[in-house]
Length: 598
Ligand SMILES: [Zn+2]
Image (cartoon, rainbow, N blue to C red; front, side, top):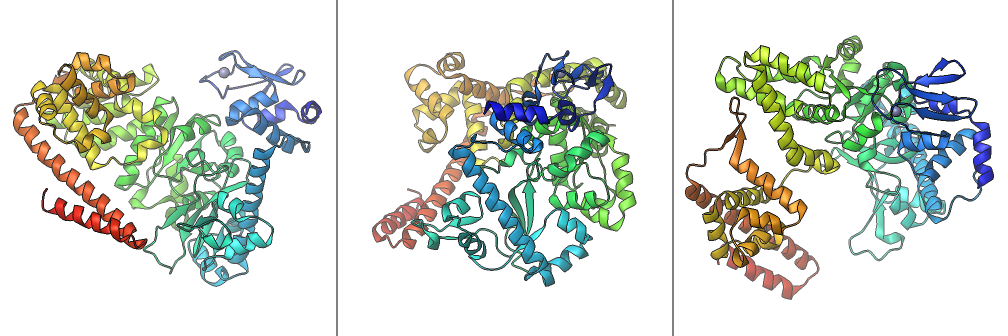
């Protein structure tokens, strides 16, 4: 293996490799650039061509060509080795035990599958109906080819048969995400069927251009009641939270343009790219993830967000802005005329699209303008809403100077004291650190999952119990909601603590683990305080706790009943499907009792 390593190093010039990622300028016998690993305005990242090493005087990172690629792409050594071996044209001898072999097989399968889908589009049944549709959407043939769009024809075993004939096992094909196991299937080919049927296929490639999965759109004229898009499942090669559609084609261009255009969907990438704007990637999901930002900010720290301007898009835009600012990425927002999406505008009015991208607006300016449009700054209430709306974004800001710039601007706009807003922001930041937003950033993907109604109700209940000993006591002593004991750790701990020790907040937080403690504090905080314009944090008016909690109790009872009913119905259905008489009788009885309110 040592010789492979030497061979790769000999064949590659570190200046070329690093130069693929960032702009380097000649500085005497060395090369110099802006460090991709820390924030800086003047370059302290040095590359020595003679020694084939790099070093940053700002963040003290450094090493050889391997460590650079590892750091840059977030890879393990072996993966970096593979990439560089390929670049250098060196065939690795045996770095590959089983895992690597498995991964290679998966990539091979996906490459073959992509060719199959392409063939179906250009020569097969997709030729008549799908190709015309894509051309109507404004795509040129060369673009369709470049992005390797394809068609998965009707039928349950096209892909399965195609790959099986070429010697791949059902299990491997399954692991590549191309087929689905039948319920109760025992293995063997008969128990699988094609995942993608009657769909337009958008291959998703990793940064090197290798296909790792698909986004599949229902074919026009087919059953539109199905999900419009389905994606490959998470697999050994496809990692949803890291995927950025188009990154393989965009990465070179990003360096020249020095910004990334972030769009919502695959079609937006393709249409925009066709116009020659090639530094574009799609988030391909509901929200930008923390991992995606980490990956992209290695290429540039300037993002332009270009999402739909409907309310979902606006929500996603705000969330993304907040995430980027908290990670010290500079963000601009591209605003579209007339509620069109990027792909439509690319087709109908390309010059307007280019103008819009060129005149992207500073994200904070965008946030402020939207808040001013939404609320009336002439009233006290309106001022408060505007302030809260803007501060929610400002709160996570990394850069102090920029933060105070926007606070001053907001103060002028609302005609309130800067000091007031500064304090509000500080409190919000503090609260955010222990509370909601910090958690949101750490959770990465979880931030898109909507909360179930029951979870909201439980938090409300815990909040009441934490602010009022009486409520806590009542719930514990009357043994209310035993159903929730299993469902919520904190609730269950509070009941136990109350019954055996005391109904005391301080004693409780001393007795539970750190994570639960943070949650209890957060819930307490949310129940007890709210953000006010003048007083910064004001105590919430909890005028009639006993009445409010009674109402909450009845809401929870209803929701428990609804959840249990849904569970029973689901179990009943599956019992009937497997002809389990005994179980279905039992469940029917339970259902009846529940309906009668027992
Ligand atoms: Zn650095």
